[in-house]
Image 1 (cartoon, helix red, strand yellow):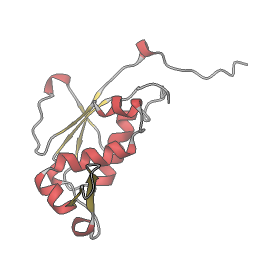
Image 2: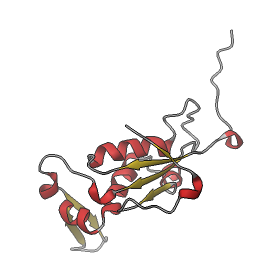
Image 3: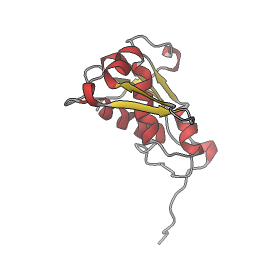
Image 4: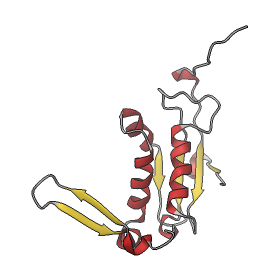
Length: 144
């Protein structure tokens, strides 16, 4: 009986392209599906120490919804590192002005915080509208 675990090699990794339509879907649900695809967790050949994930295109980022009262209460914060350098922006303003960034921050937080996560986030493309420039890659629609 052979009890060895199969581990995929770098030259055996096959990458596909997927489209996720974020229109009228909760931000967190879209982000978890995108993170799963970027990481490669949907594949039977998933290997934790390699980037086996696929490319993800998310369209209609501007139509993503936040449930409950998060649109008014949620704050995005970052700090410059200097005294008094904390900047805050409300989720309502972030979704109106820069919806791609709101989705990117959610997805980035769900990926590993190391070189593997930085490599995975490069395979993500975000578009506020329904048009994208990756038709040549023949992306498949990912429904969830």
